Image 1 (cartoon, rainbow, N blue to C red):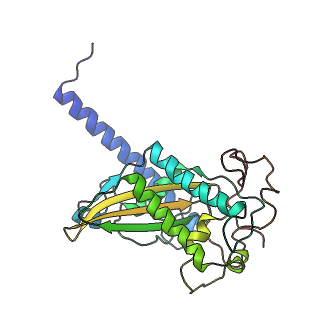
Image 2 (image 1 turned 60 degrees about the horizontal axis):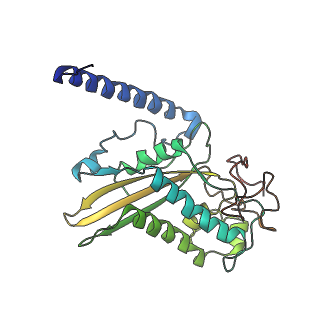
Length: 267
């Protein structure tokens, strides 16, 4: 039997922390490559430490672990709503001919975490990676006091708030996403129904604002962002363009085997 004394444990902890720091540093250097974002700053270039950035530190911010159960919930809620549109059951919107099933992506989740650990409710200017040259992002912030909410409830509420923007969107707007759009917010909804993304990754941060407000900040990154003058999704008979069949649970979506490059629609 191997016994580890306090000194050995301390050395092991230091080794693990240093090794983790080296990995984070190498990844940070990768994202500093201008080929990803040009002159813009990539959120993964010199990101906040795991304990959070300066603002998070001042607020005693804490990262909320999105375990596999929460990840599955986020993915399922997105796919349930994407399916609603894809089969033509969302009032005012046509069915989708090739809407892929979303799956979780750890790289996107890591990039989302770099934003979340800032505790600053704002889009980062760039989150692109080697695989995702046009990565997109949705943000949600929820604050309350005198009550508690489960992570499941928070996720459902936040995703529902993004989806509710469909009420201000139109088929014309998703047929050709307007460049420089300045109307009512629709970008979270259109991000959710992009047929050129099949991946999502998220992170959540918690802190107490002004000594009273329980504040939760959810960041979700997607394989493709909203692209001006391009279709958000292509309308047509449900799943008629899926080449690998459909999803059994969500029949309006293509199967998880569908290969959809994260690139803008051609028109």
